[in-house]
Amino acid sequence: MFNKIYVPIDNSDISDKVLSEALDLAKDTGAKVRISHVVNLEQITFGIEMVGVAELKDTLLEIANKLMSHVKETIKTKSVDAEVVLLENYGSDLALMIIDDAKAWQADLFVLGSHHLGSFSHFITGGVAEDIAHDSDIPILLITKHKDT
Image (cartoon, rainbow, N blue to C red; front, side, top):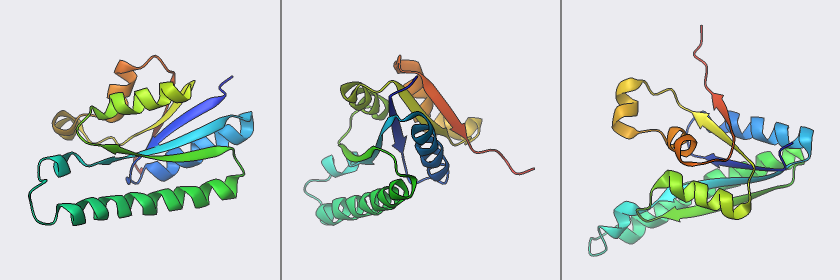
């Protein structure tokens, strides 16, 4: 059985479903949960001399903190042993950063969301879930957003 479930989320519409499924699984199994969100501040490192960089960083962190507050409220309703972490990324590979944090926490399951962006969008943006699946040996439960029929 899985004892430590790692759940990376973003601000997408699938994240609420991923969070809910992960928390329900943890509640049913007694597992601990670590929910992470990565704030991508890479653009900040290229603009240290630019006007507005500090404001941009503050805005990005404010958005992330609002998401984390929402997550904490959701956790309270589920009565699950969970922690929330905010990771700042200044240019590292996003998937590897998440994998490293999960390994350091000794996670034994990822719960990930898939956006189903389509092949062209996936080609341009890549897929963090796919990269994690490719680069990690931690098992993955993939939550998808099914199309309305």
